[in-house]
Image 1 (cartoon, helix red, strand yellow):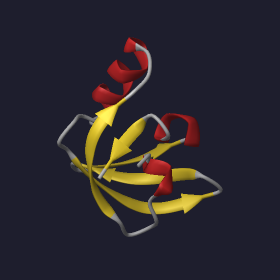
Image 2: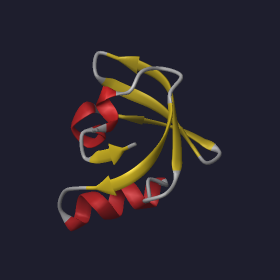
Image 3: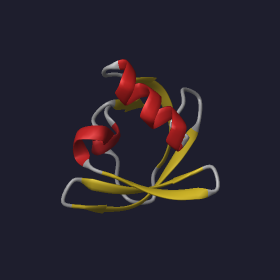
Length: 70
């Protein structure tokens, strides 16, 4: 399921990242890589605040839709 379908407080594992090479590279630079766990801190009108490794990162819903989690 896409990351946008998770709720605040959920901890999920990234299974796949879709999109163009530039988008995948940008997300990888932010710490979104396959196998990494992500915790949803908050969700505001589809946009997400996420805890990845030691950082909190805000993603808009278009980028979050490209991250497939389980």
